Length: 349
Image 1 (cartoon, rainbow, N blue to C red):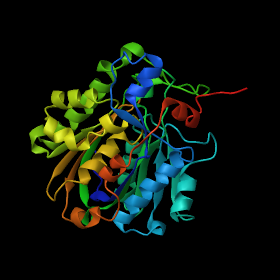
Image 2: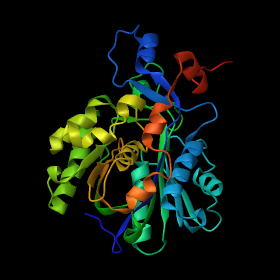
Image 3: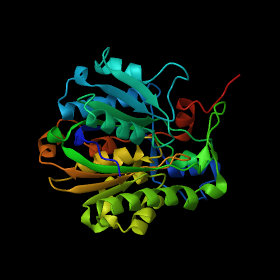
């Protein structure tokens, strides 16, 4: 288990979810004549003027509002994503500039499948825990990716989650420990010259998602000497609605423990901030003394597991930025034609 020499925690948290949604039944209408089952109710879709960078900025502003930390005091702005809009130009510098954190700041882009955001979080823990910086901002953000008609098209959604890491004595939730489990077992992958991911077929599910999350989760529980029932809440990576429920039961968590962080039925949730977004939803309702268990996942990357404890500071800071339910309520439906145009799925000429 990894714990920094200097205790750290979350000073602020922020979420952003695009207002546009495409219903899973609408995707099924186009590709299966509405005959296939659907893994979620709907997924979030970025508008024509939104991308990973704009969503990361919105989530980060919410996190900084809750933290009440001036952006110029950030020691790092790290953006984890599978869908950075530029191949060469970085996202992190644009986000840092927009927030007002430049020029004296570390900025970087992270890529590690769907757990790029949690890798940035672990690094932020180390940066602050070592005393090199007082505050660090970790972001997980992605736009919707999925080949037309593919299973991923139903769940590969869009959004961003941002976490400000700082000293534990200022935290709204302390981070009590983390473990990382790494395995080159991909359930899907995308080559550099391809627009959409392809599936790893037999690697999906058991040897990938379940094996890796269970390994990281059990290791952290063992290292902490705690049982699942000792946690108030738990949240897991959400590629669909069924997988997180199943892995929670395997680890010994109840449906009641994971319910507050289950966003996948309403917005999809396969992106670099998926579990972090669920954590934000839990922090919207948690009370001082509550404990949270979080495990992220990335295809061909592995899993990170974290244990957190909520402090009394959360109550005052929670209302400083929009809650998750605000973003869920403002849903605007779009049909497949609009979705295909906005996501560049129609190639002309």
